[in-house]
Image (tube, helix red, strand yellow):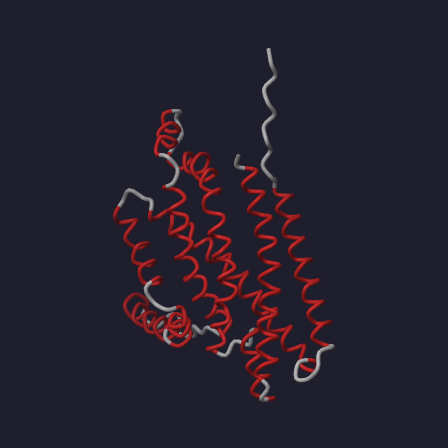
Length: 275
């Protein structure tokens, strides 16, 4: 009698924690190197290296916060799109249709300029109808959180389509077999469908994250001082666009390179764990 082959153990929470710590250390080292290199460059870069580094940190922070929220939005909307109920699918379809059919720049400007007055107006109407006084009267969104809302919703819509496609790529027989074993719909999705769908959805989700980092440059249109706007201010002060734009491109390239390196490692770990 042959002994059964040992099962592969999926990476635990400690593995993910080590991955996060490694990514944080890598970006910390990257910012240190960027500061060191830019500080030794000739004018107009050397004396303004701090502006580029601070802008790069804002860009990374904006990407991480928007990416996490966008992943949650994408999972919820993607699961709603796979529902059998038309009432559940309709809001997700409308949300994805609106986001994918309009430019990201317009979405950022809308969230920054139009969303707060709309929220205040809606709060005034609801408050007068049900409470006798306006609610949400002091709602305001600064540049950073306006960009977060717009970028999160945008990447969330694209993540939703990725997750929907990944779930639908799993043969229907898998869910039917799980249900025949007594698993509920939620258990089937959590224990059977989603683990297999991870192998399908992780690569495009990684691509969306990298694209989000570059798309965050559009936040400069609402005066958020991220990497692009920091460089534009230096260019306006010095009238030397060539070295400034070259520096911006090089810093973006460094950020995307490190981000891609660690997301590729995460992708490999998830593929190994799901075999």
